[in-house]
Amino acid sequence: MNRHPFARPRALLIASSVAFVGLLLVACGETEAPVRVVATASVVTTTATPTAAAPAATPTAAAATSCAAYAKAADPFLLRVVDKQRALPSDFTAPDRQLVDDQWAVPGFPGQSMRAIAVEPMVQMLSAAQAQGVRIRIKSSYRSYSEQATTFQFWVNQLGEAQARRESATPGNSEHQLGTTADVISANSGTGWELVEQFGALPEGKWVAAHAHEFGFAISYPPDGEAITGYVWEPWHVRYIGKPCAAEWQSSGLTLVRFLERLASAR
Image (cartoon, rainbow, N blue to C red; front, side, top):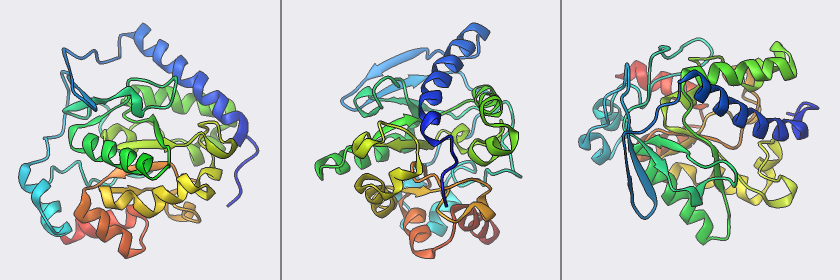
């Protein structure tokens, strides 16, 4: 699938939009200031006051060896289908979020956060990639409903609604709101930390495609999957679904949404 003509400018717009979104949310009082921050070697833990929050994943789920067992023990939001037709509530806030150490964030994009269950696997994945000479960083992770609303409107203004809907989710329909999703990207081969399909052809993008499942992550929007997902190929977009289910997803050959639908029907 060919990237649309806005591919290169889009990266510059992303930086502007993220800054704009942050300023707007602060101005509107919609950011969630952590009550407590405790630093560790790779993770900074934050405590916030969530609304309509999902329950935390249980130790039983983490210890499960099969996807079926993992799915039964995991909280209902960890493997929930979130797509263009099935949305999260506007007041849903991902619980137990932690700030990922800024060393794993794209320069200029600090303060990335994910649910606790996904943070350590994410750090392990980025560390493993780095140990193999593959430098990958997080550019975007958790987004609230209100932040996604502002982000989507920005892209409507820039690209028109039809193209924006191919590249950005409407509020409530974004996997980023779950707190278990992140956009990971590289600066190599001229991408300059830009979210472009070219990433998928780079060694870094190929590494993510080959190894993300080993750490519990799945790529939500594959090449040639737009007819199913409704979105263009996003080789940078990974969602944590746990190691047992990620391994099964990888071997299934299914798009993530179809895999999660099949999993839900079996429960």
